[in-house]
Length: 344
Ligand SMILES: C=CC1=C(C)c2cc3[nH]c(cc4nc(cc5[nH]c(cc1n2)c(C)c5CCC(=O)O)C(CCC(=O)O)=C4C)c(C)c3C=C
Ligand SMILES: [Fe+2]
Ligand SMILES: [Fe+2]
Image: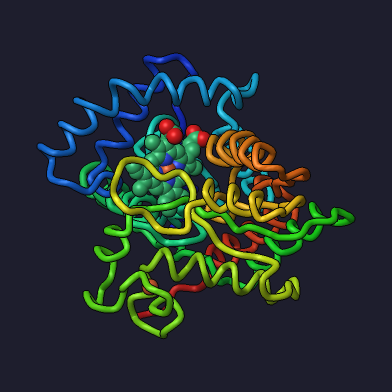
């Protein structure tokens, strides 16, 4: 059976104009796995409130980070896809969960090349209902309706995979080489605490307290918080970071519900107020630089740190199309592509 790969990332608006940003945010936030309330409440919240105010603020933010070629997230994802495609023996396509290129188009592109077995590859190291799960659910709906003879295999979250940990650790040490910093902050995209409880397959493990994520449980296969802590622990171990020289925080909170804590903005502020002068930040929930890393961390985060007396603020770029990362992903793809199927 002919094989191919579909890399899937989050997506961006088509441009920074208000109409495009509003359309993109509408599609994103009306996803029941992103704002997980009943349809009537989501419609009221998103169309009645958020879309009246947020697009202006978001468009201004996108304006600050937009490249001549387009959205950094899309451009960087395209570069990654093109390099993996060059390094592997099977066709590799790219899709976005929201906006363009769509998952439908990505699957069609592979189908037109004769692909019948697709490696679905969500570009998220850690599992979340708002990222990995929503991609898999939509892709399956499209498959059933349009490509019933296609078969899917899914790449699981790779938050603790030794290749990913090594690549991330090498990228951190390379970017911080020769830089004198007091603390390394691992800032992950946040999610509402409710999402963690919803994804708990045991229905009783995730208490979101000091210890649940460190106590072995079947829940951790789908626990975003556990997986963020594990990525951090393994990278810290690899880099031999000393205790208290690194920590975890969660960024990009939206709305009034409790999200995973501690919040990144408040953490940066606290560090500065405590007299810290040199802070480094890495954002391992994102494989490609995007609005959340280039604007929220590199611009807003730096401003907060400076306002409270901090001096050096260093941001480690995402893995993007880094050579070591391209090699790792290409090897994962080729290992899958050359597996001989086990006869039933
Ligand atoms: C309201 C809920 C949101 C949840 C839950 C959420 C989870 C989540 N998101 C990412 C990755 C990205 N998010 C990005 C932008 C972004 N995220 C939200 C909201 C939620 N995200 C909004 C409203 C936006 C748009 C921008 C804004 O108005 O602030 C991006 C950047 C996209 C880009 O074009 O650059 C990424 C990437 C993860 C990994 C995640 C859960 C783990
Ligand atoms: Fe987000
Ligand atoms: Fe947990």
